Amino acid sequence: MAERHTVQKDIIYAVLCELANHPTADMVYEQVQLTHPSVSKATVYRVLGRMAEQGSILRLPMSDGADHFDHQTHPHYHVYCEECGRVADVIMPELGNLCAAVTDSCGYELTGYRVLFKGRCPDCRK
Image (cartoon, rainbow, N blue to C red; front, side, top):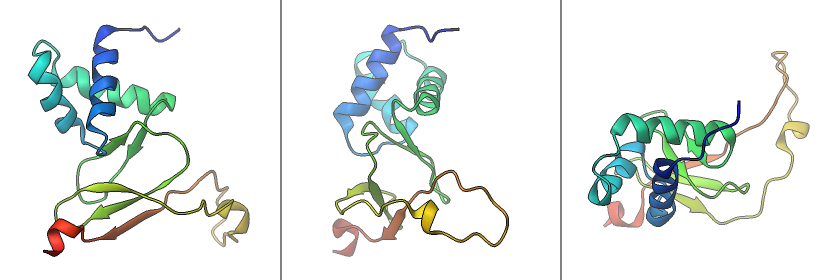
């Protein structure tokens, strides 16, 4: 069954692109509410989840907080501020095919990897 094209999906994607700061679903919802108060929080969560599953956006799972989302789907890396939770892009050359370079001793068939750097952002260091 083909995915329906909806106005809500367009609105949510536009807000994700406008924010361009790797927002959480709650952050997207808060921004959507400013201009489209009829769009529910459940709709925002559902649309972001489906878009991530389809690969039209990236879901950035954080082990100690809410998932963040990125409208840029090209291969790139991120840094996470452990103090305020901000996520930013890391500008660096791609690491290449790490899966091919890894020797797995547990019998896993590797299908991918994520690189997430952690630290403190410039604002939190002040």
